[in-house]
Image 1 (spheres, rainbow, N blue to C red):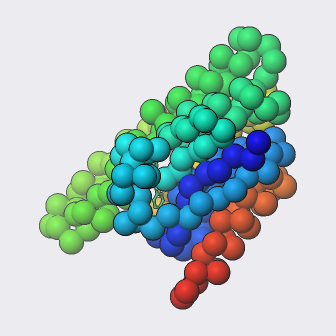
Image 2 (cartoon, helix red, strand yellow):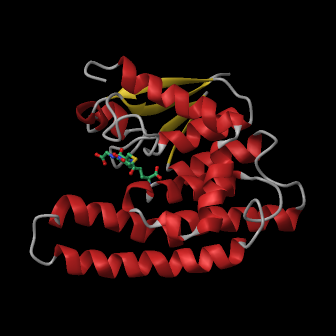
Length: 216
Ligand code: GTB
Protein backbone atom coordinates (compact mmCIF):
# COMPACT_ATOMS: atom_id res chain seq x y z
CA UNK A 1 0.00 0.00 0.00
CA UNK A 2 1.46 3.36 -1.01
CA UNK A 3 1.67 5.87 1.81
CA UNK A 4 0.69 9.50 1.49
CA UNK A 5 2.47 12.35 3.18
CA UNK A 6 1.63 16.04 3.30
CA UNK A 7 3.90 18.93 2.40
CA UNK A 8 3.57 22.67 1.88
CA UNK A 9 1.89 23.66 -1.39
CA UNK A 10 4.09 26.74 -1.26
CA UNK A 11 6.96 26.24 1.15
CA UNK A 12 8.31 29.33 2.88
CA UNK A 13 11.80 27.85 2.54
CA UNK A 14 11.56 28.32 -1.25
CA UNK A 15 12.66 24.78 -2.05
CA UNK A 16 15.65 24.58 0.31
CA UNK A 17 14.36 21.37 1.85
CA UNK A 18 14.18 22.80 5.36
CA UNK A 19 10.52 22.02 6.06
CA UNK A 20 9.95 18.80 7.93
CA UNK A 21 8.40 16.86 5.06
CA UNK A 22 12.02 16.61 3.82
CA UNK A 23 12.89 14.23 6.69
CA UNK A 24 10.01 11.96 5.81
CA UNK A 25 10.75 12.04 2.09
CA UNK A 26 14.41 11.25 2.80
CA UNK A 27 13.53 8.30 5.07
CA UNK A 28 11.13 6.88 2.48
CA UNK A 29 13.79 7.24 -0.21
CA UNK A 30 16.35 5.48 2.00
CA UNK A 31 14.07 2.47 2.45
CA UNK A 32 12.99 2.52 -1.18
CA UNK A 33 9.27 2.96 -0.59
CA UNK A 34 7.21 4.90 -3.11
CA UNK A 35 4.96 7.59 -1.66
CA UNK A 36 2.32 10.08 -2.67
CA UNK A 37 2.47 13.71 -1.60
CA UNK A 38 -0.63 15.74 -0.90
CA UNK A 39 0.22 19.42 -1.05
CA UNK A 40 -1.63 21.65 1.40
CA UNK A 41 -1.96 25.40 1.76
CA UNK A 42 -1.67 27.20 5.10
CA UNK A 43 -5.46 27.64 4.98
CA UNK A 44 -6.12 23.95 4.32
CA UNK A 45 -3.84 22.98 7.19
CA UNK A 46 -6.12 24.75 9.65
CA UNK A 47 -9.31 23.10 8.42
CA UNK A 48 -11.04 20.13 10.07
CA UNK A 49 -9.96 17.50 7.55
CA UNK A 50 -6.27 18.26 8.11
CA UNK A 51 -6.69 18.90 11.85
CA UNK A 52 -8.08 15.38 12.14
CA UNK A 53 -4.68 14.17 10.89
CA UNK A 54 -2.50 16.79 12.55
CA UNK A 55 -4.09 18.43 15.61
CA UNK A 56 -1.72 21.40 15.44
CA UNK A 57 -2.51 22.20 11.82
CA UNK A 58 0.98 21.47 10.51
CA UNK A 59 2.84 19.33 8.00
CA UNK A 60 4.05 16.62 7.68
CA UNK A 61 1.44 13.90 8.13
CA UNK A 62 1.66 10.27 7.10
CA UNK A 63 -1.17 7.98 6.03
CA UNK A 64 -0.80 4.29 5.35
CA UNK A 65 -4.02 2.30 5.09
CA UNK A 66 -6.03 3.07 8.21
CA UNK A 67 -2.99 4.43 10.06
CA UNK A 68 -2.54 8.21 10.25
CA UNK A 69 0.49 9.70 11.99
CA UNK A 70 1.87 13.15 12.69
CA UNK A 71 5.16 14.39 14.23
CA UNK A 72 8.11 13.89 11.94
CA UNK A 73 10.07 11.99 14.62
CA UNK A 74 7.26 9.51 15.17
CA UNK A 75 6.80 9.12 11.42
CA UNK A 76 10.49 8.37 10.92
CA UNK A 77 10.47 5.89 13.78
CA UNK A 78 7.47 4.13 12.24
CA UNK A 79 9.14 3.95 8.83
CA UNK A 80 12.42 2.75 10.36
CA UNK A 81 10.67 0.05 12.37
CA UNK A 82 8.68 -1.27 9.43
CA UNK A 83 11.18 -1.14 6.58
CA UNK A 84 14.78 -2.34 6.81
CA UNK A 85 17.74 -0.03 6.48
CA UNK A 86 17.24 2.75 9.01
CA UNK A 87 17.71 1.05 12.39
CA UNK A 88 20.26 -1.57 13.47
CA UNK A 89 19.08 -5.12 14.19
CA UNK A 90 21.02 -5.36 17.44
CA UNK A 91 18.63 -4.33 20.25
CA UNK A 92 21.09 -2.10 22.09
CA UNK A 93 22.31 -0.38 18.94
CA UNK A 94 18.68 0.15 17.94
CA UNK A 95 17.89 1.72 21.31
CA UNK A 96 20.90 4.02 20.97
CA UNK A 97 19.84 5.11 17.47
CA UNK A 98 16.36 5.91 18.80
CA UNK A 99 17.98 7.86 21.62
CA UNK A 100 19.80 9.99 19.03
CA UNK A 101 16.51 10.60 17.21
CA UNK A 102 15.12 12.05 20.42
CA UNK A 103 18.33 14.01 21.02
CA UNK A 104 17.94 15.63 17.61
CA UNK A 105 14.41 16.87 18.27
CA UNK A 106 14.50 17.47 22.02
CA UNK A 107 18.03 18.70 22.66
CA UNK A 108 19.47 20.07 19.41
CA UNK A 109 16.41 21.42 17.63
CA UNK A 110 14.83 23.73 20.27
CA UNK A 111 17.53 26.44 20.37
CA UNK A 112 17.90 26.27 16.58
CA UNK A 113 14.16 26.84 16.13
CA UNK A 114 14.24 29.56 18.81
CA UNK A 115 16.77 31.41 16.66
CA UNK A 116 14.37 31.47 13.71
CA UNK A 117 11.40 32.43 15.84
CA UNK A 118 13.37 35.31 17.38
CA UNK A 119 14.29 36.58 13.92
CA UNK A 120 10.66 36.54 12.77
CA UNK A 121 9.07 37.87 15.91
CA UNK A 122 11.70 40.20 17.42
CA UNK A 123 13.96 41.06 14.51
CA UNK A 124 12.90 44.71 14.64
CA UNK A 125 13.07 45.04 18.41
CA UNK A 126 15.90 46.87 20.22
CA UNK A 127 16.75 43.80 22.31
CA UNK A 128 16.97 41.43 19.35
CA UNK A 129 20.79 41.40 18.97
CA UNK A 130 21.28 40.72 22.67
CA UNK A 131 18.69 37.93 22.65
CA UNK A 132 20.19 36.46 19.48
CA UNK A 133 23.62 36.35 21.15
CA UNK A 134 22.10 34.40 24.05
CA UNK A 135 20.41 31.94 21.71
CA UNK A 136 23.60 31.50 19.67
CA UNK A 137 25.49 30.73 22.88
CA UNK A 138 22.99 27.95 23.65
CA UNK A 139 23.32 26.64 20.11
CA UNK A 140 27.14 26.65 20.26
CA UNK A 141 27.11 24.77 23.56
CA UNK A 142 25.10 21.99 21.92
CA UNK A 143 27.20 22.02 18.74
CA UNK A 144 30.42 21.81 20.81
CA UNK A 145 29.01 18.77 22.60
CA UNK A 146 27.67 17.12 19.47
CA UNK A 147 30.91 17.67 17.58
CA UNK A 148 32.94 16.23 20.47
CA UNK A 149 30.77 13.12 20.49
CA UNK A 150 30.76 12.65 16.71
CA UNK A 151 34.54 13.03 16.55
CA UNK A 152 35.85 11.53 13.33
CA UNK A 153 33.00 9.07 12.93
CA UNK A 154 30.92 9.15 9.78
CA UNK A 155 27.59 8.76 11.58
CA UNK A 156 26.22 9.23 15.08
CA UNK A 157 26.41 5.61 16.23
CA UNK A 158 27.88 3.07 13.84
CA UNK A 159 26.00 2.67 10.57
CA UNK A 160 23.87 5.44 9.03
CA UNK A 161 20.41 5.41 10.62
CA UNK A 162 17.18 7.36 11.02
CA UNK A 163 19.00 9.28 13.75
CA UNK A 164 21.34 10.77 11.14
CA UNK A 165 18.37 11.86 9.03
CA UNK A 166 16.87 13.66 12.01
CA UNK A 167 20.14 15.21 13.17
CA UNK A 168 21.34 16.33 9.75
CA UNK A 169 18.00 17.88 8.94
CA UNK A 170 18.02 19.76 12.25
CA UNK A 171 21.58 21.01 11.62
CA UNK A 172 20.65 22.14 8.12
CA UNK A 173 18.34 24.74 9.65
CA UNK A 174 21.50 26.57 10.74
CA UNK A 175 22.68 27.02 7.17
CA UNK A 176 21.82 30.69 6.91
CA UNK A 177 23.22 31.47 10.38
CA UNK A 178 26.90 31.14 9.44
CA UNK A 179 27.49 29.12 12.63
CA UNK A 180 27.87 25.63 11.18
CA UNK A 181 31.19 26.32 9.35
CA UNK A 182 32.75 26.91 12.80
CA UNK A 183 32.32 23.16 13.26
CA UNK A 184 34.30 21.32 10.55
CA UNK A 185 33.31 17.85 11.78
CA UNK A 186 29.61 18.73 11.80
CA UNK A 187 29.88 20.46 8.43
CA UNK A 188 31.54 17.36 6.96
CA UNK A 189 28.83 15.22 8.59
CA UNK A 190 26.01 17.16 6.94
CA UNK A 191 27.83 17.20 3.60
CA UNK A 192 28.37 13.44 3.79
CA UNK A 193 24.66 12.94 4.36
CA UNK A 194 23.73 15.25 1.49
CA UNK A 195 25.79 13.09 -0.86
CA UNK A 196 23.52 10.12 -0.24
CA UNK A 197 21.45 9.28 -3.32
CA UNK A 198 18.29 9.04 -1.18
CA UNK A 199 18.87 12.54 0.17
CA UNK A 200 19.33 13.87 -3.36
CA UNK A 201 16.13 12.24 -4.60
CA UNK A 202 14.15 13.64 -1.68
CA UNK A 203 15.65 17.08 -2.12
CA UNK A 204 14.89 17.16 -5.85
CA UNK A 205 11.30 16.03 -5.23
CA UNK A 206 10.57 18.83 -2.78
CA UNK A 207 12.39 21.36 -4.97
CA UNK A 208 10.21 20.34 -7.91
CA UNK A 209 7.13 21.38 -5.90
CA UNK A 210 8.58 24.83 -5.43
CA UNK A 211 9.71 25.29 -9.03
CA UNK A 212 6.33 24.10 -10.37
CA UNK A 213 4.42 26.59 -8.20
CA UNK A 214 3.46 29.96 -9.68
CA UNK A 215 6.37 32.33 -9.07
CA UNK A 216 8.65 29.41 -8.16
N1 GTB B 1 6.97 18.82 15.75
C1 GTB B 1 6.38 18.82 14.43
C2 GTB B 1 7.04 17.76 13.55
O1 GTB B 1 8.23 17.47 13.78
O2 GTB B 1 6.40 17.21 12.66
C3 GTB B 1 6.55 20.22 13.86
C4 GTB B 1 5.88 20.36 12.51
C5 GTB B 1 6.10 21.76 11.97
O3 GTB B 1 6.70 22.63 12.61
N2 GTB B 1 5.60 21.97 10.74
C6 GTB B 1 5.72 23.25 10.11
C7 GTB B 1 4.33 23.77 9.77
O4 GTB B 1 3.48 23.04 9.31
C8 GTB B 1 6.50 23.10 8.81
S1 GTB B 1 8.17 22.55 9.10
N3 GTB B 1 4.11 25.07 9.98
C9 GTB B 1 2.88 25.69 9.64
C10 GTB B 1 2.12 26.16 10.83
O5 GTB B 1 2.52 25.85 11.97
O6 GTB B 1 1.12 26.86 10.61
C11 GTB B 1 8.89 24.00 9.94
C12 GTB B 1 9.58 24.90 8.95
C13 GTB B 1 8.87 25.89 8.33
C14 GTB B 1 9.55 26.77 7.46
C15 GTB B 1 10.90 26.61 7.25
N4 GTB B 1 11.59 27.51 6.37
O7 GTB B 1 10.96 28.35 5.75
O8 GTB B 1 12.84 27.42 6.27
C16 GTB B 1 11.60 25.61 7.88
C17 GTB B 1 10.92 24.74 8.76
